[in-house]
Length: 200
Ligand SMILES: *[C@@H]1O[C@H](CO)[C@@H](O)[C@H](O)[C@H]1NC(C)=O
Image (cartoon, rainbow, N blue to C red):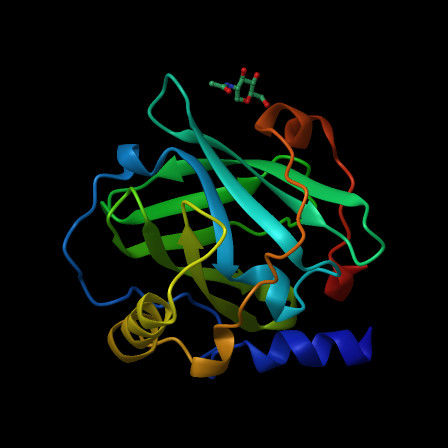
């Protein structure tokens, strides 16, 4: 527990308690982020959860304008992990509030889309206040419509997240997307098994 908490602290911002509101960037049309994204950098590489390979994120539009979201991937032993939630729109055009339906992560997550062209890439800040621990966890997330991204694009999006959005550079870590098996959304939504190592 102590050792894993240090990992979380490594990603915590120095200011306690509140996810900062990033500087405004051009508003994106969040309805166009629907569908599957492959995680090129993000949570699973940040030791937030035990497993870290082949992670995908799916946003399925709901009738109320929000999204059902599911994410999943492969544990180090090759088995599947996944979690489901709802991503709700907010008054800020680029900001979604993510809530886990399984309550594996009991804190809402601010998902702020800094840039996307909808068809190829998406860069976001993923931020969570944990009042019980008096910390704010911030992670840079880089997603792609395919399971690869050019080094140039990766560098450009990293620069955006660090220098315009203000994320610590070590909060952006790449996710393994190699020799992967991917599951359809329907199978990810059935599973409730996931291990969030810092909180077990
Ligand atoms: C969204 O998720 C809820 C509950 O998990 C489910 O009942 C509903 O059918 C889903 N809607 C879509 C559009 O997938």
